[in-house]
Image 1: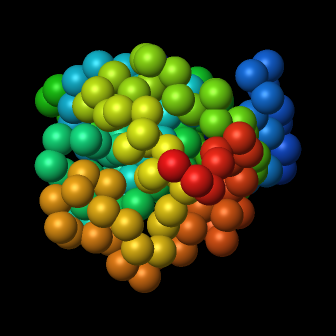
Image 2: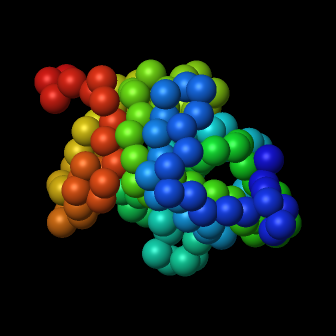
Length: 154
């Protein structure tokens, strides 16, 4: 669910029950869309639309690398209007908290293997195997987001 303007906040540190520990959050504008983005859903910044979107596995994932996670509440996208939502831009979470079936569905039914690749990499990768790697992007760890439990070997 999108947060009303009076409910938006920023926090120094606010852990939630699933083990996610946010040290910096940010209020951002999400592009029109449909469905819910569950808490811990990976999001990307679409520099064409200048808005945030869920990581997609539909040929458009090259809109960018993961740059944050929906947090602390789910966000409901609106098909006719943009919505404001809060995302974690620095902190720590476990892989199991951002790879649930609901999150993979919200990301266009991305496979677990492709989600791991997107979480693991950031400097040069081709999540979709479409021959269009995203180059010279800082990794999540360089941005200040540590996703534990993701092996480096696929």
